[in-house]
Length: 289
Ligand SMILES: C[S@@+](CC[C@H](N)C(=O)[O-])C[C@H]1O[C@@H](n2cnc3c(N)ncnc32)[C@H](O)[C@@H]1O
Image 1: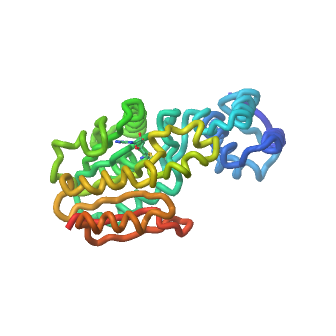
Image 2 (image 1 turned 90 degrees about the vertical axis):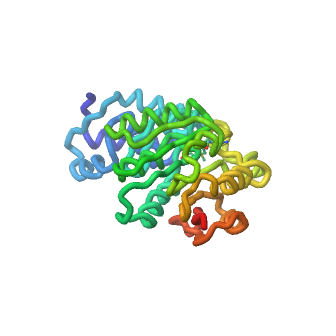
Image 3 (image 1 turned 135 degrees about the vertical axis):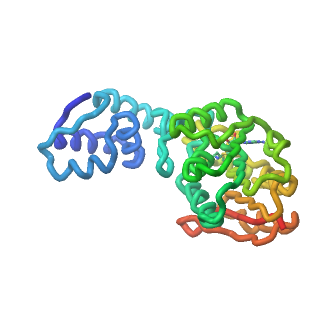
């Protein structure tokens, strides 16, 4: 543990930000590697003469920060961790860094199922770091979940994140292409969720380098028009959902209307477009009949 005065630390922090980068990324570094949360810092800032304690020396934090600025590598990958809802998750370049807008999926599920249902079976297709599935499994111990991904390395990280976040055993992990690992659950799912790769090819080519050069292509690219995976997921969903089962999809900012049409074409009902906190139609949801 390194002990340093708050005043000295704040001076160091301002110096780091003057080199570039944003304060959110620096906060992630301080929290994940330094062991100092933003809340701790706010509380301590009222008394600049107090001492604060860091898990790592300032030189170590500074070298990670400079690597982040130099290489454009997301700070979460350099720290190996990220925060999502109330979870602290391991992330490597094998998984997408879960985005804050995706957090709303958990609230959408809670709104649909509330406390009405004691036991449901859900599947998440393309779990990445496991964020969505782990959050749902932890919040609902009586539910059973299956998290899938085509990438075995991603699945191992999701599994590790689940083990590290709880003692529960209500989430299982299966590897494979979209619905194929779920053959034995045909007609049994109350809920399926997916935040699939949905970036259209042209847009993918123009993504900022901190995304395109570091995050997995398989997690982002959704084919020519971005809807390749969404179409496949919707078309096969009726085989796996129970009667009146729900499908919740995240999509690109301008895809909701198109996703809605694909759902209608595949006989889904109760279709709704749910906006994210920026007012973008980010989620499209429906029930199978
Ligand atoms: C946009 S990321 C979402 C990750 C995570 N659910 C989240 O919200 O942060 C899409 C995920 O789908 C997985 N994926 C891509 N193609 C797939 C396929 N054909 N079958 C199953 N999973 C796939 C990727 O490996 C990636 O983890």
